[in-house]
Picture 1 (cartoon, rainbow, N blue to C red):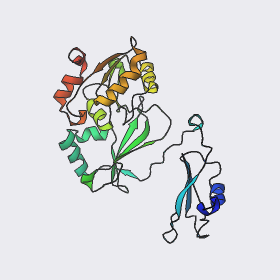
Picture 2: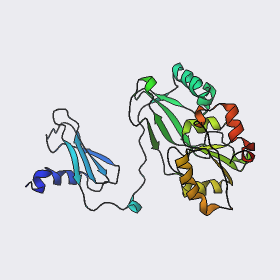
Picture 3: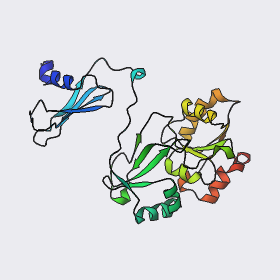
Amino acid sequence: MATPSNRYPHKDDILKIGQGLRLGVTVTSVCPFCLAHHEKSFSVTRVKNGYLYRCWRVKCDRKGVIPVISLESPKEKEFVPSQYRGELTNPPPKVFDYFREEFGLGSEILKTQQVGYNKDRNTIAFPIFDSTGRCVGIVDRAYSWMGNEREPKAITYWKEKVPMIHFPRFWNVSKSNRIVLVEDIVSANKVKHVANSGALLGTNLSEEVIKLLLDLGIHRITLAFDPDATEKALKVMKKYQGVVKITVVSMAKDPKNTGYQTLKYLLGEDNEQRAS
């Protein structure tokens, strides 16, 4: 039977390297396995079930997880800003052509929303804006038509801890106390041209987001989600009955794949008289 020291060689060394790390934080050091003192090729990351380690030298490539019994409580987790790497440039013409042909989004819309291209990663970067127009994160999206088969296709990076919702630039709540909530950032950037919109970026509607919307003076919310997300959102909204008016719109396709005339009909200001 293997002893703990045999099962996890250099366990003490790895724990010493990772001592004090918060969840999601990585530190580098000299590898305790290959002892390549000329470079810090060994990384240790604090993960939920312990310490993830790896030596990035090809000749070594030792990797694994040192389990830890006493895990941090979720209440003790501190927000760690995501580091987005790569220089953003203006998208090449083929990107503008794709979004115009696929979603009906013209180049001016992409420029207004400051959509960029990451040459190093071969991805499209969609800035996440808060209600004041500050960029608080980035949705980094890989597209197979660009030759990028990365999984997951979309990765979200947050610069700071804020409610998880994207407001397209030049969002103007003063015109209405209403918002249309959609699931993805491209749909929000498109719907913005027929109504105030917000994207939950693949997350479920949370009380944190609802309270933010109320603070912004929003008392009418239209949900343009898939059935599963709609059901979850309605459960969260139960305690706000009488405070917020909820309208559910069933759509055959995602908003980003829907024409502007249909979007205006279903999600425009007058939709509450037609939607169920």
